[in-house]
Length: 159
Image (cartoon, rainbow, N blue to C red; front, side, top):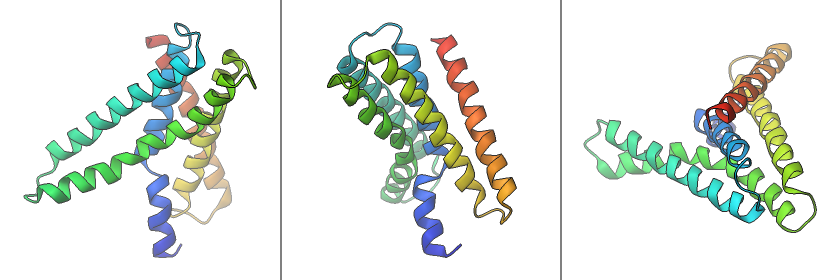
């Protein structure tokens, strides 16, 4: 893979994107038992993920041993921004519920399903720079999707 493509892919396919996707789906799964309004669920979920994103970026800044504070802040914010990608499908899907295209229950299930598919895709593309073997890439994708599903279910039980 060319360096430019790898760098571009790295902005979207990283641990933070996986974490943000699992976090978003888990928050929606857990909160959907207590919130019956799509706009309230959307705003609460976005707020929760943003708080976790700020905490994650702050933890990276604190952990950075570089004497250059600006570079530490920029690096932490850039790396942790992947956490916010999980909000994109959530926002689209819950907006469909807000406009009456689908019910809130259906939209929550669709969002969880889309998150698992997204985790599968992230797992597949995470394997691209590591191997040329398609079956290994597919296995990595399936494993990431399955692990994501387990994490979402566990997060729902915790909440």
